[in-house]
Length: 225
Image 1 (cartoon, rainbow, N blue to C red):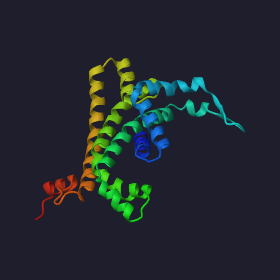
Image 2 (cartoon, rainbow, N blue to C red):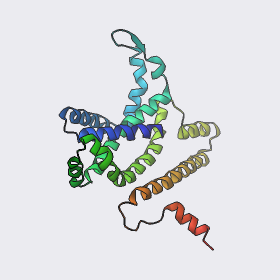
Image 3 (tube, rainbow, N blue to C red):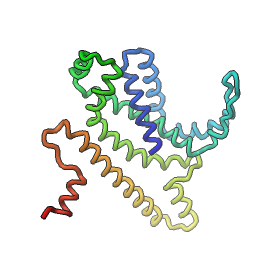
Image 4 (tube, one colour):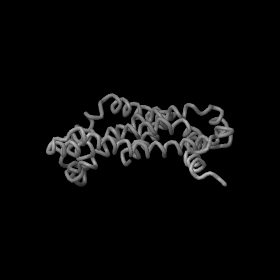
């Protein structure tokens, strides 16, 4: 969840930078995407895990900041590594959503005297959410499964814990089934939330939007008398 929050916030910022009229902002965003999309997330996690052995402190001119407490925190490094990688993919998702909004909306906002930033915040992004939400939900599901890679920096997670247990008990298949059930339970809950959010943002685009999942369940199991 923390890594995805970082990915969404930073990805939206990078998407806006890529579409900015400022060439410096566009260049910085392009370089970021080039690096983080062009290298495997496994390699990035290994890099963050080994960073503490390269730099113990950093000199900022007037003081020396100790980095060892931060770079020895495996949980913080995992969140940072996954979040920075996810931001590169979220940037393209947000950019595609922004591009789907008709240019007439931008022109109308400019005619009302809105700045470029205000136009993005009040006009474009709210309409783009209908396009952004579905692939973002898929990225969240993918992120959940990608967390199994954080064991490379010695951070115990679901699959790593299962592996430690069946290394002692030799019950490989039953424990892998336990891990699978946990993944399915969490992914089902996330899918329900995603469906409800998609329904919420589709109400303004459809003349007769379908009922939400919760309303459908309520009508099915608790019909009116």
